[in-house]
Length: 130
Image 1 (cartoon, one colour):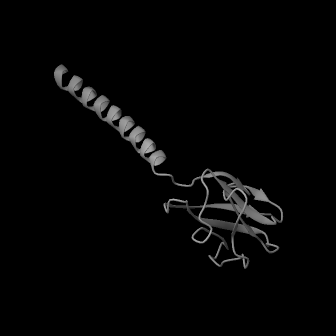
Image 2 (cartoon, one colour):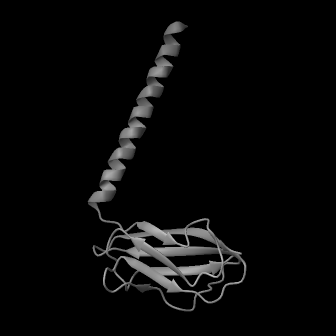
Image 3 (cartoon, one colour):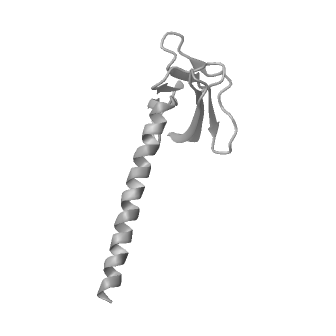
């Protein structure tokens, strides 16, 4: 009886260690293949803002402007930005899109970032206009 409970905790400890090792190797793979990830976002995820002029995301890698995109949509999923996203010509790390005057409500930002090496990352987050 006593023996089997020891066996269980040993197995659990092994799986925990394996999970940690797995997570570490995934993050090092992520660095080997340059994927552009957001460093700063404006408005930030979950922010409550008044009349934002634009959505701006700065990445940790230079972007391929032709393939990267930034779309803002309202709670019904309707795109609200008519302007196309632009990538900063100097640094090529900041992507921004101008916004019209947004009525109060929840908005979703969907971004696709394609780095110089052609690797694509994407994500989305929400902010609220009050």
